[in-house]
Every structure is written in structure tokens, then in C-alpha cells.
Image (cartoon, rainbow, N blue to C red; front, side, top):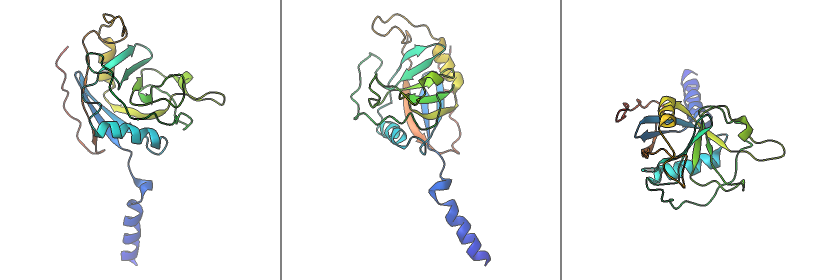
Length: 196
């Protein structure tokens, strides 16, 4: 009987119900940002984000839009503001019950709801006005920062405004040096900040 119970317990632990959310580490010029992805609530968005992560798309891109008290955005441009070629747009999953709260990640898009590709933003405050409602789609939350909001705040503090076409971009480009999937029990990488 004990062997049967042990077998059943081990079987239950192996089911997807017990699977942990995937995590991604963004190593930036100012330090490491670690994020957890909500694959159950936003499966299409998470799969899309991981596809970009796994093929190296995010390596070398910059945080091109920084709006204090609102969002920090990345996912589309190289350091010289060349737009990267993306995959097809995905279905908007903003009606997934998740809210645009401080530290969450959401997909950037145009006015067309199903237009998100690679760009994402990190909410700096509770931006619940970006959530879906009964009469309008919102911006799909698909993850949250679990370590490194101090790094996000460092990005916010950098001077902006010298680029006429990108006035909200930091004057000195801040890059995502690498983006990679990690396990939940991975040790955080040491701060790689080049100094302030």
C-alpha cells in the first residue's frame, strides 16, 4: 500500500498542475532583471515571448521608451534605433484576469488589439487603466518582475531627450545584453552594473 501511495504522489507531482511558471533573466547594462511568466493565464503571449528569448532576438536590444511614473519599454530596437524584424502579431490576451500593476510586464501594441509582436513594457505604477474592460481590450499582462525592480528604477533615472525621433529614450543606450530562460531555483546572477 505504501508503494502505491508513493507512486501516486510522485505521479501527481509530475502533472502540469504542479509545473512552475517559466522564468527569464534579462542581463542589462545596469544589472539583472528576473521575471516570472504567467503561462496559464497568457499561454499565447508567454509562448511568443519565449520564442523571441530562445532565438536571441532580445540580445542587444535597448530600452527605447522610458516614461517616469508610467512604463519602461523595450523589445524592438537596436542601439542605433534600427527596428528589428519580428514574428507575426499575436492574439490579445488582456482579458485574462491579470492587472497592469507595478512590476508586471505587458505587451505593447498599436490601436489594433491583436497587433503585439516583440515589444513589451514594465509597469512602474499600478496602471489599471490599461486593463481590459467589458467594452474595450486592454494590454495583456503576461509576467512580473520578481528581482531587479531596482534596476528598472535605475533605467528611469537616466537622462533622456537628445534623440528627436525617440525623445523618451535614454541618452546613453541601455541594452539587454542577454535574455535567457532560467529555472526557478537558479541563483541570481551578480549585479553586472558598470557603475553609476
